[in-house]
Length: 116
Image (cartoon, rainbow, N blue to C red; front, side):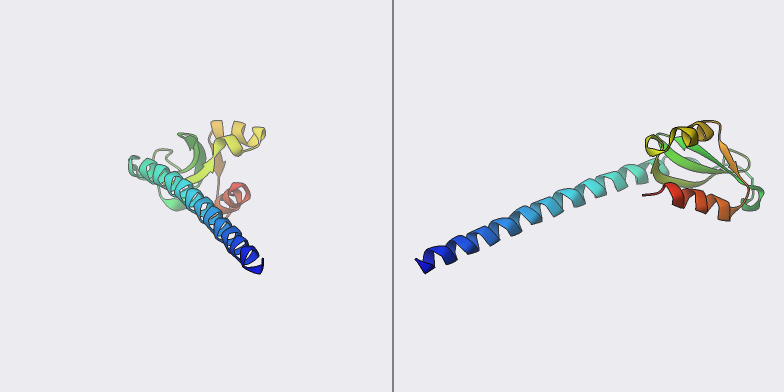
């Protein structure tokens, strides 16, 4: 009898390890797919312009994600992985109108608030 319980116990542990491994692998693949989408978006964006970093920033949306432009509104400073759909309604309205942020410190404080 004891041998049957031991075999059943080891089968249960093995099954649990297999299920956890498959779940981990699936979530890892999902994250990698999202990163690849973001990286491909960053590569396809041309960054032209002559603004300098200390003149302020504009936060806008591009392909459903937050993007930070330099003060000339054409040079991309940073592409984030923050989805516009996840933002509160008031912030989405500000982003539609290209929210202005004066300093880099304010910019990163804003981005940290809404990053996951």
